[in-house]
Image (cartoon, rainbow over all chains, first blue to last red; front, side, top):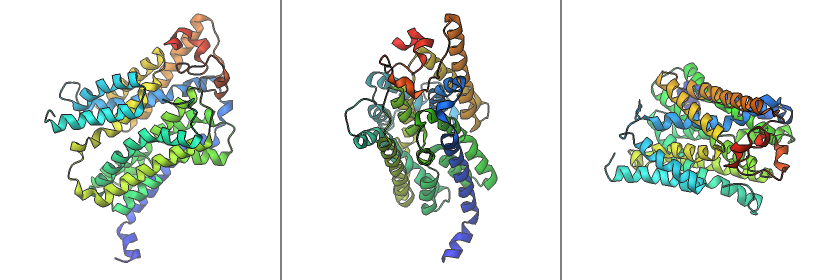
Length: 116
Length: 271
């Protein structure tokens, strides 16, 4: 296929990627580029200080409690079963690398052993 | 976990990137495999990883493209799931104050959930800002993200299922590792539990994609409200703002002290 053919064959996909790149980069770039970070109102600064913990919790909650596409708060949810000891490892070790390796390792072990 | 190591800024950037690389390689690989399975050519899957550098956005894109969704609905879904970057980018801005606009723009390009979390945690622990560390960490992690996607997209047929490798859990493992160091006080733990519960409930109610941004806004608002209420009860005014970099200079600042909260909630910060 020549180059023009490749572009026209993927025109819809390319358009879609272009749109998605724009709506990904604008939220990343606009605040940090244009906000004057050292002169924000105190209340807003306090509010923003809770964003790191809130956004991470908002991401991880559904990841842990939705297993194979469904809400599952029971022992048949492998991700939930692995997440609980991972929290303890994270708390005690204060080490990102160890926490991530422990979690992935436990998932591999559980599936390799045929428990899940 | 971060902060005051005597290592060079370059080594510190690599050290900070290492755990993220451990997550990005497998997750990037999983994206490459998934993208090709959803009829995205390998070259474009890699291009997406270079230009978007957004795990959740790219996975939403691949899933919806494979399902035959329209360009408009895919773009809208990616935008909604990425609204949280607006909050993260704003939350990082006080720490980057004083840098030229062009530098802040370039640092914004490297913003992801993970780089944001490790940098902000380091700032909160009194780290003296180093552009070398910030850029080395951001660019190393993006290299891993793109490399993982390239391997997955071009060699993905070698792997029929990513599950035995635990790759479907890699992102969750990373989020958990990044969440725990953020829980620096009882108030933060409360905000985390509240926000996670809301996000789960919104998703269960069918608000997929919206759940993250909406839960984050409500969670941060709860935290601010409780902080204000506490300050009022104790009769101490709130000053500065938690994210104020100048607070770093205080000798009393410690790991558990989110800058600015020393006055507001003294007993919370001793843990």
